[in-house]
Amino acid sequence: MTTTKKKPKKKILVHKKGKPLKKKVKQALLKPKLSEQYLKALKDFDRAVHDLNRGAFPEAKAKFQDIIEKHSQERALRERAMMYIKICEQSGEKHAPRLKELDEFYTMGIVHINNENYEEAIKYLEKALSFDSKSEKVVFTMAAAHALKGDKDESLNFLKTAIKLEPRSRMRAKMDPDFDSLRTDAEFNDLIEPKEEEIV
Image 1 (cartoon, rainbow, N blue to C red):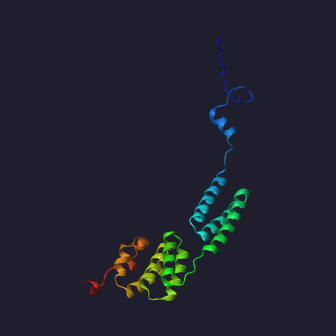
Image 2: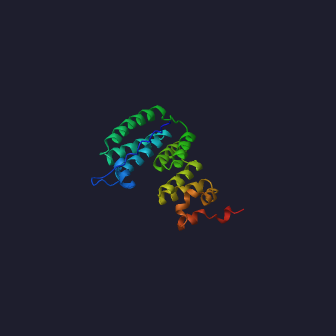
């Protein structure tokens, strides 16, 4: 005669009156609810780590410092952020490029524009202009960086200079999406329209 093993009964959570708890109530008891503040802190932390992983050490450091200020009550995240700040500082010193030529500063400016870090881009482009203030490509890129940053007047001033250095800059600005924020500006539209002497 064979005996069949009885399957162990699933443990059912009950409340004080002896009735089974509903599924949602069970889950609430089993899984502690994370606060919205903590979830936001985690998102901020992930963004900072992403910047660190791609080598954007100044941006990552700024984000980690922001976490320490905004989420000071989250002790574990705060301590990890402080540790990562040290890594950012050490890595930044170790990998900081020693730039010596116009094209090197210009390239770094483009990199920061692509990363939407316009303040840093402008700093590198200013360094590039210190080598040659009449470099049309640098002046034009300065105009684009300021347009992306929302500095209309600065952008138009650099664009005027770029057009004086190279009239074909009009067409470049007309086609370049970096200047989309200025499309409805009358002064910008007047600048990018070719003059009669430029029409062949």
